[in-house]
Image 1 (cartoon, rainbow, N blue to C red):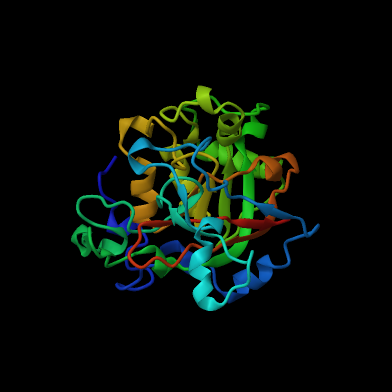
Image 2: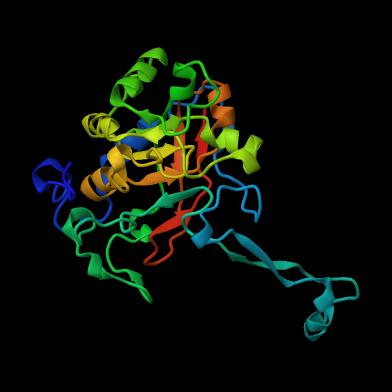
Length: 302
């Protein structure tokens, strides 16, 4: 397997040499309008995890989200300057949130291979102080489209796939057939492995170093169906340990090569239980200039 995407078989240059949105270009106004006609029940599913310090899948070096109090009733004296009446005040917070823990979206600046980001931009366009000069999360912006849930756990008749299960393109095709759904250009693929549900049921017993997810064999499925973005209920979209022993190989192929954004740690328990296979899917990352990702609370309307 090549260590850097081949320009002839990727999306580099497909939308111009300056493009920083990648496969999200597949979602145009007509695609969004068609997606708004997908819901049948109007039920709203929040697919994000709560932002809290404990009981979340956290990679240690990134740290857990922190909600810190800025002001509270103990600071009531400061409101006297505003002529606040006795007993009146406000509570406020400060958040310290890693961009790649919890439910989040990867920007196209998140991963580079052989010194290149998506579309061939040099990795050196990223600086520690100023962040991503190219392909920051603000370049992706918010988007909406048709989401398609492919439930691989249901396909195998289990609540959760085995740790290290590498999902193949054949399994994705079989899950689509079982759901009687035909994927369309610009769809957002959402993959249910059951891993996150298992983690939330038993955080202490869950292993972050062994998770089901997409294998390299699934890359062609995403590319051939012209998928705009991929989400899943695990930590990396791809299988852990990494397929064929290649570090972040699916990130390399899809994020770097084809500019397909990833939405990780989706909470899919309710969506899967309702067998809601197609829905209006909306994601709005924070427009953090130069960031490699953003916390999100994606919304599905079934």
